[in-house]
Image (cartoon, rainbow, N blue to C red; front, side):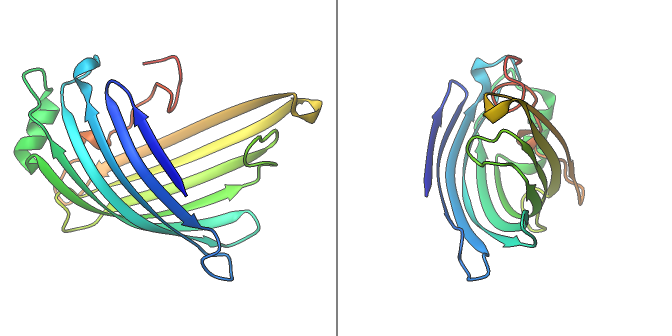
Length: 200
């Protein structure tokens, strides 16, 4: 069971998650997530917009090997875009004209994970690989897909884990379908604590 409260000048997140790692005797896991997320970019050097989102979903993990898992999930998201103001980009304005200020999205996801790290908490060697595909189902206000792949590897430089080098790489793609565009608030962003710290 985990809780998250995260606040900054542009992003506030309140979430709760629960996972039962042995939902079945075969090691199938089951979990749920619920969240409230508020974004206000007026204090950043980007286009002006603010969104208020709430949602949740269920997920399952199926072991297919000693270190391999297949994950599937279903979730729902309700997002409202507040008045973007005069500094909004043409992309934000056009999105609102095409889709309105409120979106309801049903999202299906499937992923694969292979975790060969020597420790989940303090890894010093091994690697973690993840691939995820999420698709906004037909009938949602917006229809799109996003896919990503991550490769994280640890190299022990000094015995007993006194110094470890970690290299992490991630690629992603997102597109709309059925005549819809990828929502601008689902874009990928590089920089900051989530990817490259020290870069905006």
